[in-house]
Length: 493
Image 1 (cartoon, rainbow, N blue to C red):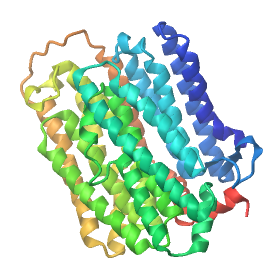
Image 2 (image 1 turned 180 degrees about the horizontal axis):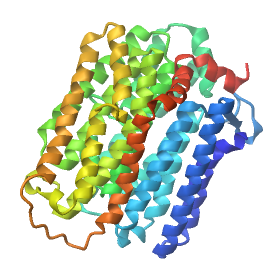
Image 3 (image 1 turned 180 degrees about the vertical axis):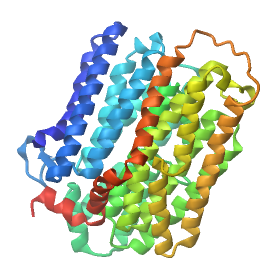
Image 4 (image 1 turned 90 degrees about the horizontal axis):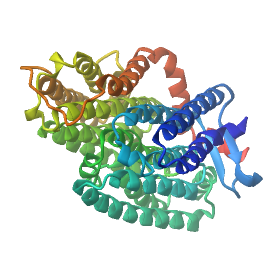
């Protein structure tokens, strides 16, 4: 059954390769992409169910036992993230069929799309720190292509910035891995944790921890390393924005969470204290951006930054309840951010602009779009009993219990500003006098709306089903708060 771990990686990989041979046959590409995406979801569901019922799954590639070979590890956290990624990918595919355009479809959009999913799923699944770097590069190379595909002026400009930032980040990642290997002599993540525990508190370990925070902080867009994100995510079309906003920053957040619970637990007062400060500032910066702009893209983009800060504040608190809240909120944010990006994508296509001041009255012609956005906005704002509520409550409560009243208070207060920012879109975009919009082409609004409706329903059910889902999330958090569980599963000790 351990071979199940490879399926969420192999299916996107082979789907991407097959799609290359049908680059100019768009209908065939769509069918192959749909089948590949559905199979990936089935594999991810089966894997998550297996992990929940039988425990952490491991697979040693080429039959080299850990820690000597590359190991794939699927614990509850990674399997849940792989499942969420697979769902979002499927929905973004549906949206792409009627929105991305034939020109992009004929220039390898779908193969690159699946290579991106391969990189994301691989980063969540690997149990080897250098292999994580490899999957990061697969993900990033695919994202470069998706960002530039279309060749508009803004895409070319932002791709150059995005490329330069990630080249520097990748160089620092290799340096961090090299420094880490020099003191522990292994690349297996479970074995690294064991060796660092034996080594005890050391200045060099703290320096490496900060270096990894810089590397993953660039990927995850924490303060002050978020500067590249608003421009880069603003440039591509809606389905690519949704993929980037839902998945790419979350890989960085996952990496910080994994390393700061498995590796760097010797000097928690400094490392996690630094993470706490940066996460709180990240929340503040994100809130300021979200309420300051009148551009629907920028509002949702800055809300990504808010969510990154909230999740990492829970990680920095470093209790099981806080980690449970962070996982709850992480999965919620992946789903609802994808939904919101797809929804504003429809709004932009209708209005021909992303400027809120030039929108209004859409509810008269598109009530389904309006009320789907309204529910998604309430979900993002954390209105009970929707999915944004329980995760933030757990994070805030843990912050108060740990004595961090300022940090927990800022996270709690951020909910009001987040809700205000998305309600600003609802009020100005959908309410008021009906305007005459003349889209450049006939819009299949009902088809496009199907994708965000699916995600919004998933987010609502995720919140309403908290009681049933809590044991699953708690299992994921237990592995983070007790690294011995992970180490024993991988090293068989």
